[in-house]
Image (cartoon, rainbow, N blue to C red; front, top):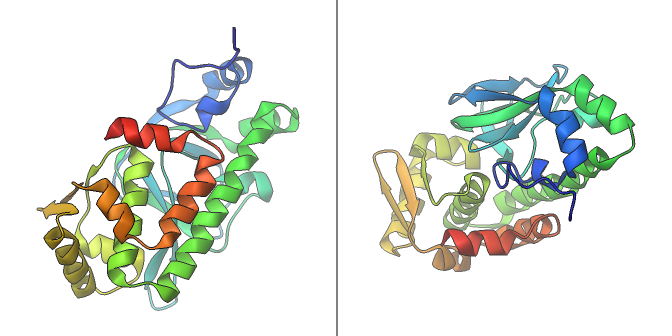
Length: 244
């Protein structure tokens, strides 16, 4: 019989990759916490004291300019962890992390993760998540430079859906504008185009993806690049098809 723990699948897919023995050693230190909308997980320049494994929430990694403008660099949902840089130096000066979609997640002190990491066992596999997250961050920059607002919005909505395992979620146009780095009027036009094409349904701060294959076709290649990187870690396509 395999020693891989399965009882908590798929609430956090990164935790689910751990062998049973490693997970059971970590489990007493995992605290299930509520992650309310806009809660700060860590600030730029501050030491990272907790690592978060979202269950059904999304944590945004956001860069802020001197004039207060913001743009999202990456998303962390049930496929990953927020605070991985704690295993690579302890803090970040480049971005802050806050809750974009409210929900729940497990948090654990960095000192516990570091102790387990230093054992040299399966928890070191958590670092396999870093290349996937880095690809997402890098591709976001490429997307912002070369692709239309409609394509960027389609990519971003697909990533949000993947992060929470649902094609329906609450998001305002103002918030989306801040995350993808465009004016609110640009989001209004782009969302209208996607709605007119019957790819999404948007009303009263809630978005529903009604034609996922069509939205994937409409999105730029950046989504496929990110999706492919995460497919190296998880059986991504099977989960998406089961949700549909």
